[in-house]
Image (spheres, rainbow, N blue to C red):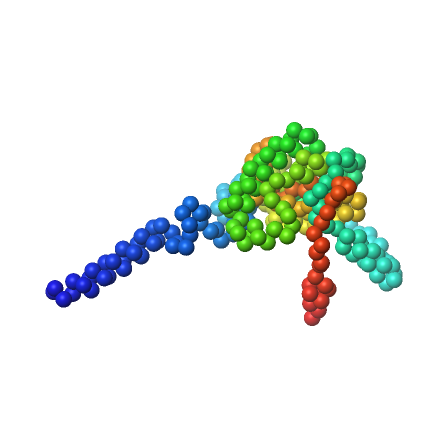
Length: 287
């Protein structure tokens, strides 16, 4: 029995070391450093009620879809092959000049232009034609200041803790940090919210299929429309700011912030990184 004592002591010691290591977390993680998240870039607000599970809700809470919709003849403009090539080339060259611009002038933008680009974004396709988007246009200086305060407060935490060293390092070449001056200087802020579900006239919930994909397509069209109008912007996705911004702008809980676009003219001293886009053979595969 005495001969087994050293073996038992060794086993107990190994177990104790294993227990303490797991209790304290990874031995490589410094004291006070947050645990690594699998997807730190996923906004908590976006994950809140994003996926609508009808089977988990009462059946009578949901509105049945329309059974009949009138179909009408489709009107289409067909171009000659030469015209098609020219139009497609011109459109490509227009969008190829689009850049993410963080230096935006405070010069005012015509209201009608903003109305038109948002109407263009609203032509995007959506799951079952639910059109699950809300575009909030902010021009009031006080509201823009409050938006900047919320975003910079959260972004400082993002850069110092949530994002992690790899992400922060990848952003260094863009010379960006948690200071967002363009939120004050840009004459217009467009905040795009996705509606995770809607409401019918009778108050019942209406399912919004593929709501995030649908709104993302609308955002792409909005970027193209802004470029076409001669305006600049930078796509921003304020991490963990969604709930506070939604409350500030008095939006309902079924709406989640997807993107924020500061919009205006470029400032006279605006600069952009000297980047190259991938070539066609790098992004297209023909089968």
